[in-house]
Image 1 (cartoon, rainbow, N blue to C red):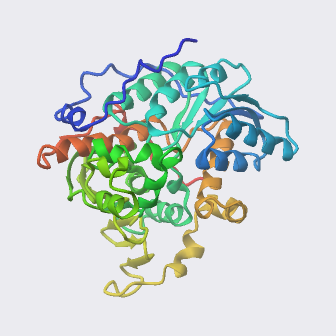
Image 2: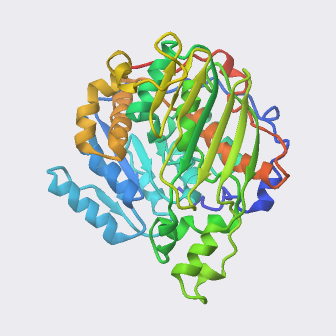
Length: 443
């Protein structure tokens, strides 16, 4: 297999975003008649690419699951790969083979014929090319968020999945949070009436990551603030709302408009924590401190999505859903349901727990709490991925979700640089959203 790194160009920068205005999906080829894979497998054989904080956590939790084998590990840092292979041995399982010979050594891993699926936990620019290569090698691709940085990336994922029939799932772990699953159950049971509006966010003070200068997450994330604006990381807040609203399964994102505040916080932080001559003080930060995007769906619903990883503010994902009969809001959790109390006053969410706890959380929640990982949501996500593969079931998130949710980033950038003009969201399903079944409340 040849090195295909240069085949997919990551279109960074404001200039790339401006080309997205008016971009539609009508010119894309229609989806071929390729059934999604449903063959059950007794044991899921995994390879993992990227073993930093995120990938290492995935490895540790996968080793807790029944029916999983870890066959291969890849990281550009050889000591990191070796450390995690050592960990596998210490858990009493066979030592996985290590791949650490440069950026493209993951391609050697993909040549193996004893892998069913590959978990990709690498810097953003690698997500699409690695996922595409994984599917082309005949393996299922599980990729960290966001799955794509550009519209071309989104289409590459969709068209490769349709051509190969391999799963491509963006691992949006927040969709498996306890409250998010409970609210999904509430939506499916009609507690909120007809849904009209949602709000999601990723507001998280991550300025400390700017101190990752040589390696670490901030080493590669911080430069994105220098060359892009809009919402650089939309899916944590958006994913659950999209599932509540049946996006790509009865509704879809139609168009959006976006606005960003001034970009001040990163430069201020650099001045306070780095010497004047440091590269962090020479940079020009263009990503607005707060990004706000409004999305209109084809069925007339509205969604607000916010992103801010720069200002001193407590963490929140908002996670608000409104319907004709009531609403739920997160951070802090609150609920108001018509007919179950005075809707002028917040009601106690815990009084709804026994009735609406999601069956999946009821099934594995205790184990998830012990395993950890963002309150257990990471474990539930991995448990569910493995369960679906072992039983030949469709995944809860598919390639159309990966593309639609990720596309909000480049589309928001395009809107921002054109004075918040509306931008169409491509229909990555090419009309199939109208007949697809909503995501079920699974047990």
